[in-house]
Length: 373
Image 1 (tube, helix red, strand yellow):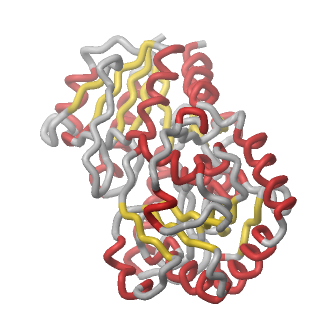
Image 2 (cartoon, rainbow, N blue to C red; image 1 turned 120 degrees about the horizontal axis):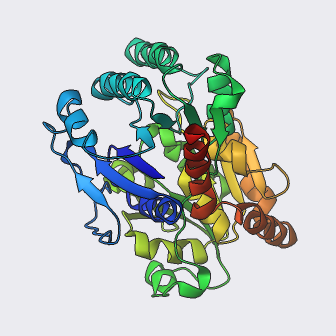
């Protein structure tokens, strides 16, 4: 059986998924609109020579031209692109209907779920409603919706998509194992002593990510022997906010092969997304932190927090509308109790152990197999 996977960007964290799919199916990946590897602020060139990947120009990615390319392929199923802008709303709709009529199994994978509360502009509200309209328009021509989160699954149910068309799959990101991490002098370079604790944030520096609330909460903790590491592009946005705070460290963008060291030296991971304008559809850094045995705190505006955090077992899911106070309370609760911190970290590793690329790839295999019967 052969799968065509249309993708909008060759993100480094999806390359291993494509490898796992290729173990189960013949797979040809097309990267649309000429994009290569999506990673902000750092130079990164992963290896993908072992994969069957074709990059198409913007002209080649238009519906008529794309169909000419794809119609030359013999395939059983096709993953159509996520509908994240006007171009892809149109392209995905047309592709879904076209290949449904040709008897192909049409698959749709996206982490999206709607923001039901919070404050956002009329433009974003309208964009969200348009997505819902197109989801309804396409639900008959899409054979199976691959759903990576509870929130996404629930959204499709509200769209009255039959449960037999919904296939759950784990959403996965993996970095090096602890054994493979090459330790440098991060701690000593930052002036962090061995017995001092580290709270880690990994992600872009944007308002909706809750970074400002996290900084305020950390300052309220008033612990000189605890450190906050902020990893991710955009550190210039918080320079004034953390000026003079010797135990708050804005690191900037980190290469994928170096990410593991920051998880390995940390004691707690926090991803405090807000409802300010948008939500975090998933948040793969929670996966990565759990892989390294960290307790995790995430807000209910974070897709992965709802799926991966069992409050009281491996961390806490907190209310995005009351971040600052919740962060102070739950960071203290975990880091002031070494036994609780250790226990929660162990539970994180257990929970995330089933979140592998091979298990994720199974969803695409099962959908293709079902569609070919």
